[in-house]
Length: 156
Image (cartoon, rainbow, N blue to C red; front, side):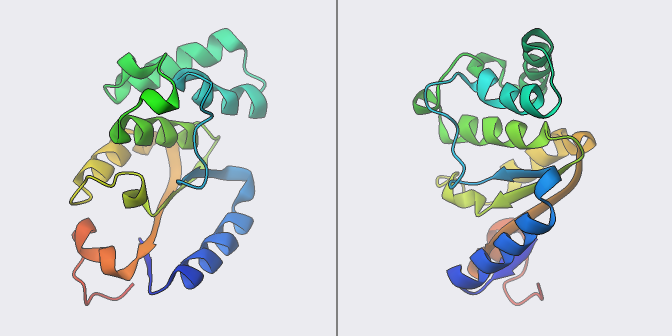
């Protein structure tokens, strides 16, 4: 987890991190939304179809398995506007983890999951996909530390 005092500092460090990990980056951010006119499965499948030249059928099978793993099989055909915050976040996370050897970055996840009080939901999801990712990083503001179970006065 990386915590920052200002938006400017967070954005600068995030830009640097993205540039350093561009080939393997899986970004979960309100700045990288799902494509509104595509169903969830297709939003996620675009990544392996494009980067790994995976067939439509194979990509669909992979995505269905991943959605089932997160208990989200029912959202496969939903489009972005019809999703709850948690469903949207799950879809965005799966889109990030299907990047080969993914370096997953959660950019201010509470800006997507505005109704959550703490990071338990996030940590539970990351545990479910841990075997699919190389690294996971959270970028957020220092005032959000307590939401992640980190003492407010703890060092970054």
